Amino acid sequence: MQTHDLVQVYRHNFYPDERGRYGSFGGKFVPESLMAALTELETAYERARNNHEFQAELRGLLSSFVGRPTTLHYVPRFSQMIAPGVKVYLKREDLAHTGAHKINNALGQGLLAKRMGKQRIIAETGAGQHGVATSTVCTML
Image 1 (cartoon, rainbow, N blue to C red):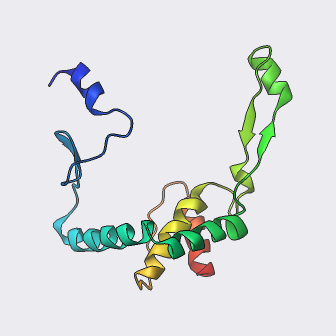
Image 2: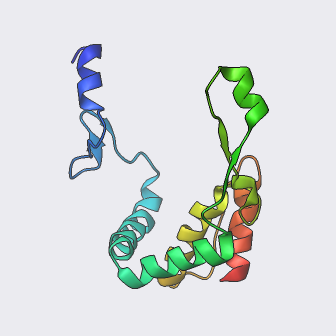
């Protein structure tokens, strides 16, 4: 396969095959000891993503607990610096509970873990905001 052929493979709305691979690439490359847990997680996710009650609970908490949707804030002085007639808006994710967008993902993960009957959550974080969001969701749930 040539480089220009890869562009054709990785187009918008292209989904992985039954093994979770995109063409010759992709897939799961994790320790074998994690495969059972990942399979359990995938099964639970597939059930939850099409479950109206789960989705309604997630939407409700995103609104009432997280504060979604967060507002757009027009920044006129910055807009003027960019170019005449351009209007720049900032999406105010800092207004979401815990101060960042990380809470959105952590909430979905927490609800899924609760649905699976899990009692412990592990967060592997880099910058810390994800850890704060995960801790907040665990405390709330």
